Length: 257
Ligand SMILES: NC(=O)c1ccc[n+]([C@@H]2O[C@H](COP(=O)([O-])OP(=O)(O)OC[C@H]3O[C@@H](n4cnc5c(N)ncnc54)[C@H](O)[C@@H]3O)[C@@H](O)[C@H]2O)c1
Image 1 (cartoon, protein in one colour):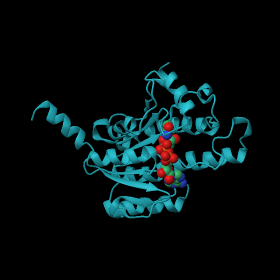
Image 2: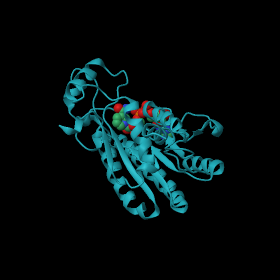
Image 3: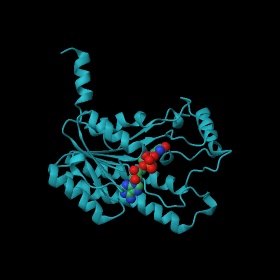
Image 4: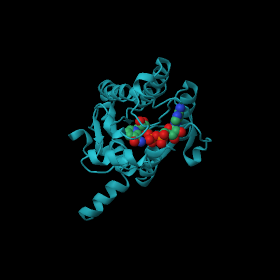
């Protein structure tokens, strides 16, 4: 086999028969993660809130903010496959008032968003890691953000009603360091855990915002889901087995300047 064929096989089969749960797999990024996993011959399970359970299709209705729902989802996967190779914490629950200006945010809204996004991530990691520890293998990728690493440049919202929610910085920054904690705790059990931090993903946002964003980012464009998904798949593969506790930033250079 020539080098090109070997490389092709490495890419196409790197997730072969791996059972990987993606929370929020119906969303913008989650959908691309599911497609990437399937394209690499993995078994993708979409755990999303508004999704009728059909395990044959890889769909499980799951509310990540609800303990019973998380337990039920994990049990369905274990009953069907007897193992969990990977988990992508990607779901993005948020309150109806998400996106308020900093000075207007009620404390209850802040609390609720931390609970829905950060505490749910903790809970699903804890439950999944118990299973992975018994198996003695597994990989987790937590989807964080550049805004867990740097503060927002508010000038990109000039001329729009948009802003960057304050809780996001606390949630994503916490996810990144929590990932280091669990990577350290579970390394000896042959489990690797990393973050992927995307920059802004194009999704038909206000054109003024897109123009402002594109001017600032070195690569002069917003990201696409397909810019992010191959790295997530790589971190779930055996090729990344010795990478743990890291935060891989994919942002067209936003955080490089
Ligand atoms: N879109 C971006 O520009 C961007 C940039 C950086 C990081 N991220 C991160 O990527 C992740 C995905 O973002 P997205 O833009 O694809 O979001 P999205 O809103 O398109 O999708 C989120 C998905 O989560 C699901 N969901 C919501 N509440 C849920 C719950 N309680 N339980 C289970 N599923 C639930 C939704 O149904 C949806 O399918 C998030 O963690 C987000 O912070 C996004």
